[in-house]
Length: 329
Image 1 (cartoon, rainbow, N blue to C red):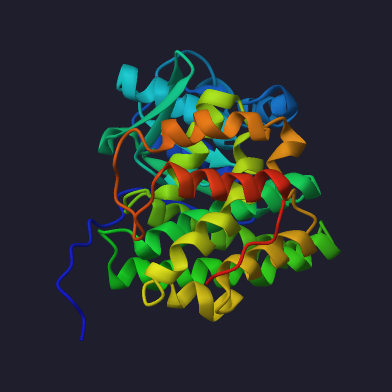
Image 2 (image 1 turned 180 degrees about the vertical axis):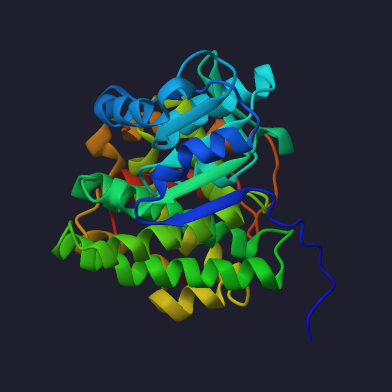
């Protein structure tokens, strides 16, 4: 029996393939923009310059925003777009997944807050497999696990539905199958295509569902402790999934079909085999930070399949600080 549900639809136009960055000029014109501001991180200046050259006369001024890069670049494009009303064309080069969501995270006074607004969502997203071929192995793994976290939380979200469930399960399957291929051969275009496809699906479901414990904890560690985004997601995912799985086995069945019934432990094993970081302490978060993080994480209530108090969050974070393998009980 399928329960009643609401599916909000997918308003973002998506172009997926190899060489699709070549369509950027047509997409800028389709958005009705006379000029486009190209955004990138310092590490991707060369790619941004090539894109600007390809755009020609379109690549100047501030009448539209084209963000080329990972989550931070796409996030900056979102922030500019929502404040100015400019259309936003996102071209992600990692698997982090900000591009398909209506979520904007901003840090002020040492704490990260998020807001959701349909206007935050980019109008168009171009996925080009060729742009991911040079992604370093460490960022490949951590951003892929970041994407997987989106799908896991969407499965047990209070506004989950069968459409999102199928997309989340397929996204996790693609990441599970593609990451080992990419680790074995970073230039494998079919492996890269599989992971990027999975990242798109996982990003899409995050844009449709409420966030739970995992994302809230990542926001606390990123906003209040300056922890790196993708690495924090990668480390925490096995622990948050293992914590929530006993209360959400039915909802998490698609994830367990991919990784196994011991979801927390299996995700940790997968992360370890791929060379992902396993301990928060490797990035400067220590046992001394746990009480404050647990207090912030429990300050406001939000939807989560398993109830928790500061003590439970402290225990979860302690295991993540040590890098211990969690278990789904």
